[in-house]
Image (cartoon, rainbow, N blue to C red):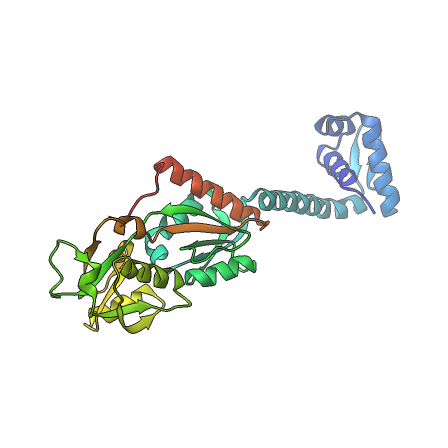
Length: 309
């Protein structure tokens, strides 16, 4: 089988129609160039050039080979470039998971970064609750996740990208809508729209810790796994809920918010931060490149990730 160097030598001579000029173009001397042509002719069992002391010309066989040789060399160059881009993370496919709140708050910044810095990568977006994203990361079904780490997973690494906290979601006109904040104890006896114990375990545990911190228990009347669903229940007056402050940006009409206030320890407990998560042993260069660029941008914008106000 002929080699790429033989095809390159042939194309150079065919385009220059001069062995000396072709050798100079390839940064080689004439004898090795002539040798490559001879090897190619032997491999193809065809004479490719007629050569006299005055001129070089393509034979009929050479005329047939020239366009095909160009296509082969172009394809090899294109393939080499594509492989290199995938290996360095400049192109490829990244499967990105995100929660409903992350989709409204931090996902747009990440998408803008990818479009600006890595225009040749393909992003596949998958919305899901945090625990499902952690499962998907462990199984290699997604490359990156924007989530709240409900439980520790061996091999999954996380980095804080946005500070957040729970606030009280109330139906408009509720008697607790004062603008002064709400104590946990003031929620006792009120119907609470609560997070599911499996899909939204992180929020479920956080809400219980907040109630336990002041020695009271919630009155749970409805359960949902997604924050938009909880706010929809609040909007029609079925009760109150505790949702991330960043959820205020996509609240439905009829929902108002109050800060969660309380004695010492409440501020330390009340964290519902968003993290970027990835599988430490995953080998997707595009995902690694995007992750590194995103974390570098966050660090450059602010040493401390922003907090929902």
